[in-house]
Length: 107
Length: 119
Image (cartoon, rainbow over all chains, first blue to last red; front, top):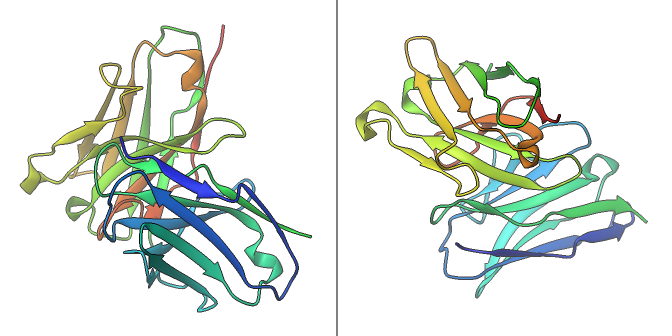
């Protein structure tokens, strides 16, 4: 199984900050990574697909990138509505596996 | 608008069975792979099962934790997907989400249905 090591697990930040969340897969997954946002009591929402593509309706302050074997989700100019838990997902191989989540909270 | 609505959750005892359902609309259901994802209380997301489309012979895939106990199925004529859960264990207690995938997994999500396994 492909393990997705996600960091940090908790990320205190201030409104207006730029933050980055990272996932490192245990083996090559190409561009087959997605990022999801989950707010308390809500279903997850697709934010990024194909490592770098913004899903429909997602604000342009969100972006995805890849550097070597590390994949990142970056949020520029943090807004209060961005406070949530973020998960990465690899779908290069079965079983599909998620990262353990990053809780983004106001400092 | 896309709608995915789960139903059928509840409280069951260990070793019992339960079948949860998912009704989808607002997209071409027959062209979408369908999935179940679960989330135990206070925990992260876990993929459970997948069913492909008719051209892909409705192939199914399962997480090791549920293989042999859970069965995913679909009825394209009704735009429905199901998860039959047998021999339930306390560790199956979770919110179960139905999700649809076009370009990849989990494009659209339902609001979830709670399944509690407890004696």
